[in-house]
Image (tube, one colour):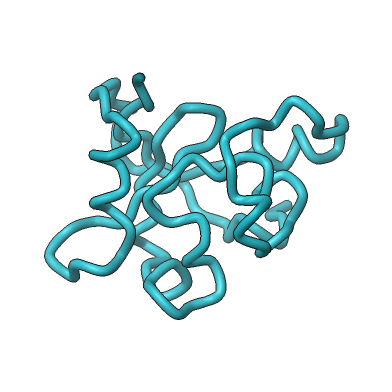
Length: 111
């Protein structure tokens, strides 16, 4: 079952392991229509372009686009202050939300 923060999708491509710095990931925030939209969860980068309309600037989930927003995604929070990578405070149910993401994996966040 899909959570509030994760529309039902099914990966259609094998996972990739391309490295992205946070600065590189930020370029995939939906503001450039010629680029895909990426969201990272627990350091794994997903291509959310199939639901692009939800992640573009000004849209409901734009706070997550182009970054690792694990805490906010797990909490089902759209607050910008929650859209951070630190998910250490999430409970089991919130971790399940993160673990259930089903988009194509395009890379990983590196320092």
